Length: 294
Image (tube, rainbow, N blue to C red; front, side):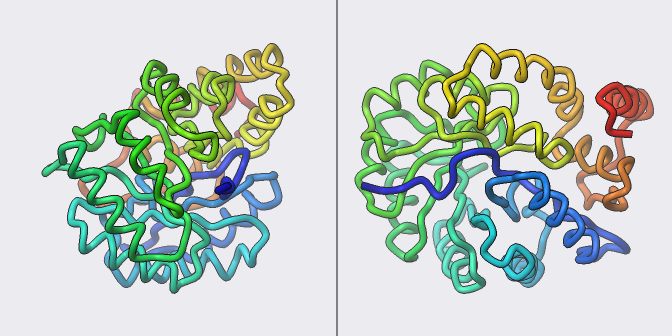
């Protein structure tokens, strides 16, 4: 039986920049903040980590640095997705060599794929590495949505262990649970869906909000794993306004801005991402103050 690479809250961590380069001092500070706050896994070079604007060399160095800093205390999961299957294979092999414990691979974007194409794409990647692989379904970003039938086919692969589900479709999640084996695991890809997905058998969340409230996200999933969903529901509701603010503009603009306000990084982003509008920035600042984060 395949095992989940983690149960709990994994942070989809930002990549801090300064003077157009990766700020490794800030990244180290962020990693220590996560580890000391109970985060259960680190997801590096994902959407929130602005992987799309990292060079290949930067990407591999960020993964290697994270592995070195984490030093085996929690799993490190590297984002290695691409809309070019050969590129995804190369990224996955090299991330594994850099020390990543597992891979997170998004559905192909822009050129998209049929469901048959998704099966062939993911199978080719999984065949090329010896690491566990988590699929990532986020149709709002990629324009393609995997089906439960596709998950059922991919679940047969010994290294494909589950999916980060950010479709927002609870019907899809329920159908996936019904069609797939128990060792095909589901993690929430949306912070606001965490408790609900755990109620349906999910193993936790890959979280944006955990960048700024790691202890709270860990506690939320821990409460779910204890089957105390009444309390978990209350915790989820307390986080709702914060989650809204973190997505008032395209991710990771708000969360990076929040971390800059909290003193963890410069807040610099790479184009085409840019600074928040003044009105959204003010709302975010007020929200952080209400949550006691400033």
